[in-house]
Image (cartoon, rainbow, N blue to C red):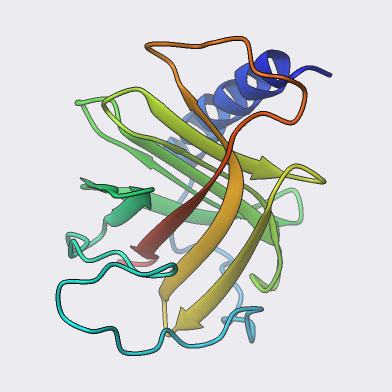
Length: 174
């Protein structure tokens, strides 16, 4: 499957997850946090952004995300267990969208997508990219590597597509 079809399917999955999460009780049937597959973020020198860190603080009940050097917040996210998978999704009126699916114990990332309001999209799923998640109570940090595309300038990439890093930090609950 070429990268354009894969990205289109990923964006459609983000939209579907947002719709499903809006109908779910965010606190219902959420299992205790898993051990996670990522380590705790190390302290970073002031003024330097590092992999695994979003310097912009996430709003209460929301999330912050970074693709490359661009950071953005989303005011509201919802987390739930759906069909044996843990899901988190959120979005805002400016166009930013986030979606994550993981195993029900919330320890292994299965897919993740970040859409920034400027049209930059990063996504990973299956063999296309990777992601690790770590938990501190109901707050998680997901660090991933996946395909990055600018929707405003969707050049025809080869099947591998350009790869880039992204980070999502969000809090589930209340």
